[in-house]
Every structure is written in structure tokens, then in C-alpha cells.
Image (cartoon, rainbow over all chains, first blue to last red; front, side, top):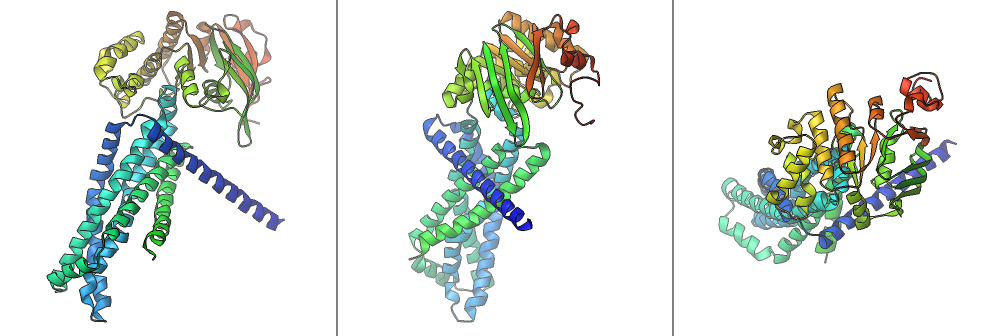
Length: 260
Length: 250
């Protein structure tokens, strides 16, 4: 009996999971179709870009600097054992542009703007503002979802460039002024090992992360139920799901882009 | 003409409407009464297509709105206005933007929309000085008036009010009731109101009672106090004994 009940629960969880995933897929499809078939609310997109972008610049800068500096320090510790400290520059550059820039930018945007998107839309759902939009002949997806998703998709790559740039600068400062690596050696090693595809692939990742994180955040807000408690749960789930999705997507994208 | 036939809706195991039938004639002012948690709001949301029924039909002017989507459903919203229980004003917009939102979203400028907004606000008894105010600066009664003005901007043929007087003082309740009646008469709008307030019988032309997912009574409002339907008799007098189950007191 116990065994049957366990199987029953697992089956129910799988069905619910598939159903939610299907709902999310349809929501995403609806957002994409709405983006290409209705008049774009340009002002709203710019407002969201400003909210997500300018609002996240400070935190992205701090994270970029900290990661760049740590990377330089850690690389130095490892490479010094093999007498290869001249490779600190390429390691910092490649790590920032390929991985840490896009991934940490996305994680920071999830924490700062993604959670706010879920809370805002969730609050609107609970207070029937989204229903009100529908009854006023306004498509809530066009009005609320598309501007946020588009703004995030556009702005996250810029933030990622910003994060990577200051990470590389922080790595340079750490390597040259703290670890006494020759500045010319540092720059020359980057020039000879870096490729344009390192930057473009990192940017492609950032575009996909920006799209995914905003879609998850708006979806969780859009379907919020159950008052203040439900809103709290939705916001937590939004942050957790978005973080996990970004990490998993990063693995998939890295496998697709960088394996030869 | 609204005709609801065999409407069924449930959330999980909780049955909300259970084979509900109801007809509302053109120009009628119908008050729907029933206990809290009976599903009156869910019924109204199915009526205008905000919620899809599990089965059954909702005919508005012979069009089944239960199956409509997208643009076709938007046409229903043009026809049927919905005034929400707590007004559901967009809290990031001021009164002018809230009332004029549909026109503004269709590309009109604030200056173009403003005269119509002022006209609708005046018709619900609000002065121009509220235009720049945000919802959190308005009283409960003012919010409901703004909500009504916003709905009237679409010039609907049918107006649905979800508990318009909840949480208001008796004077404001009376003013809101009179406003609903005035709007009903002046605009010749078919009006459906959910209310727990027995004062609504003074203004409505008909009363329907929802109990256990079905309409158990529909009749004229004027003679409601003489009505011998056991559900109505118990409900309007607030009697503990009768066919209406005492939810939570068994």
C-alpha cells in the first residue's frame, strides 16, 4: 500500500511538473507571438531597460571587479607552481567573457530585477489589475510581459560586457600592481590567445539568459495565486527556478558553443 | 439578452457552479445574492469570459462567449463592462491615465483623452482635482467611482459590478447604489450587481439567489420581502434555520 502511494505521488508530481512546463512553454510562445504581431510599446521597453540596466549597473560592477580580482589571485597561486604566470591575463579574459560575465550578470539581474518583476506582476494579479486590463481590452501579455522580456533580452548582454570589462580591468590591476606581473606580458598574452568568438559566444549566452530569466520572472508573477503568502512563494520560486535554469542553460550552451 | 445554461465550474474538488441556469433580459437590473464563498464572483467572471467554464454555455446576444478567445473575446469586453470589488485600479498610474487607459494604449494622447475622462468622472460625481491623484491617495468610495468611470469609457451595453459597496460606510453605500441606478437608467445599461447589502433591493428590478452552485430563485426585487421562497426568506432575514447550509458551523 505504501509503495503504491509513493508511486502515486511520484506520478502526480511528474504530471504536475509536465503540466507546468507546458504552461510555461505556451506562455513563452504567447509572448513571442505577441511581440511580433502587435504594436510594440517602445516607451515601456525603454523604461524597463532603464530599470533593469541602470538599476543593476552598480551591483554588476562590484561583482565583475570582485570576480576579476579573485580570478587573478587564484590563477596566480596555481600557475606559479608551473612557472606559467604569464597566462593569468588570458585566463581572466576568457573566464570573464565566456563564463563569469554572462552568468554572474544574469544571477545579479535575477536577484535585483527578476524578483521585482515577479512581485510586481504577482501583486497585480492578486489585486485583479491584470483581469482589469483584460476587461479594458488591453492584452496583459503585450502590456506587461513583452516590454519586460524584450528589455531584459536587450540589456543583459550590455551588462555582461560591463561586468566582463571591469572584471578584466580588476584582474589586470591585481596582476600588475599586487602580483608584480609585467603589464606588457599580461596584455600580450590576452592578445595572442583571445578570439572574437569568445566575446560573441558570451554575448549570445547573455541574450539567452536575459530572455529566460525575464520569462520565468514574468510567468511566475502572472500565475500568482493565494494572497500575500502566494506572492512570497511565487517570488522565491521565481528566483530559485531562474537561477537553476541559468546554470543549466549555461552548461548546455557551453557544451554547444565551446566543444570542438 | 444573457442566457446561461448548465454552467459548471470547479477548482480541484471544490465545485463552484454546478449546472447553473440564468437568464437576464435587456435593460434588466439584476441583483445576485448569496452567501460569502458561494462563487458569485466566479460566476460573473465566467459571464464575461475572464474564466472559462468546465462545461455549459454563456450566450450574450446569442454568441457563446465560453468558447471565445483573443480578438473575439475582446469584443465581449467592449460590450460588457466589469467593475471590480476593490476597483482594481493600476496603482502605477494616476486617475487620468487609469480612466483613459484603453484610449491611451490605442495611441491617443493625454490631451485627446482628457475631455472624455473628465466627462466620465463628472458623471460618477468626481471633480477634476482627482485627475492627477494616484489610487493610494483615494478613499474606497472614490476608487470605486474611478473604477466605474474607467469602465464607462468603453460605453458598455452590460455592466457587471462585483460587490460594489463592500467595506464602505452606509452613506457611501447609498451614494454608490444611487450612482449604479443612475448609470443604469441614463445609459440604458443591463446591470448585474453582486451584493450582500439588502438595500440593493430598492434599486434592482430583479433578484437572483445563488446557493450551492445553482440559482435557486429569480424574481422581481420589489416584492422580495413578501417572497415565500425558503432560501430567500432565510437569507434576507439572516435566519440560522432553513435550507441554506451553515458553512463552518456544522
